[in-house]
Image 1 (cartoon, helix red, strand yellow):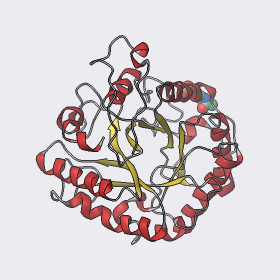
Image 2 (cartoon, helix red, strand yellow):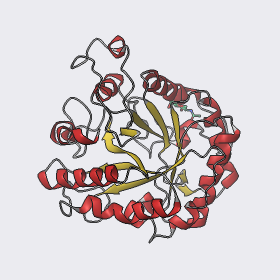
Image 3 (cartoon, protein in one colour):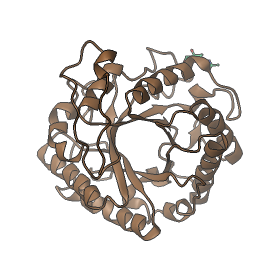
Image 4 (cartoon, rainbow, N blue to C red):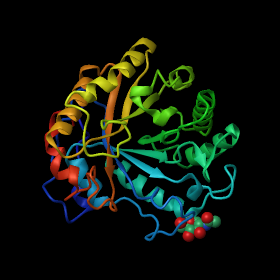
Length: 333
Ligand SMILES: *[C@@H]1O[C@H](CO)[C@@H](O)[C@H](O)[C@H]1NC(C)=O
């Protein structure tokens, strides 16, 4: 059984909280319940890009509001090229890095987890990363920077796709080894697979085989899979296939996690603000709760200050999912 950390002093961070600070019970089953906080990966064709024009950082007050709603995990997509611009083995761009420092410090200062998510699809300047040791070098630099913050979680890379399954396994292992070697030995690492790390394709894509062989001296890796509920599973439609599609699409991955003694997380999911999608999402979350021996939690896609009226936007106070879906998910937070 787990409870959200008491929100000591949340009000001290902001004079504009929408409702009084409260403590709420975390759904017993889940260790991680949260959202992706987009912004710093925006404008990814403009590299390095300009702050405020091409990209932005998540909003402190929005995060504080979501914490009050019971969320405890915030995934921060960033661009690898903005953090280390010249080569994978290069040096940090401090202008960008201090932006990440700030948001990580804010989130973890409230007792929540900050997930550092290089949102690169296994690519660097649009080329599939094949330099396994270079990928490790990138992670060494980032992990050293946050090695002493217990509430930081390292997410190896967002949605590898259309590349060799064995390579994806090697890149994940290089990241794990680099992170542990950098002295970040107690933090969780979220590992992502090939085929957009889709739960519904986890075994059929073949990514499961190489991913299942990953080793971690700290034994704290979590298999981050993504699952959308539209026809092609891409997360590009507000419609869901059926009211039961959520649970159906997870069944195979659940069986794999159990058979292999692994822990999983749905690191991205969403559906439109309509009755069928709400039922489908509830079904997905209920399935995870019922199998909480292997599922550690879920993250909604997505929050962030620049989503506007995006169909899955959960940014307070007026995001489409914030007003239209979140009120129906209380049993799973
Ligand atoms: C470093 O980051 C800043 C802010 O994003 C950007 O303006 C600058 O051009 C970057 N420098 C390099 C070398 O990428």
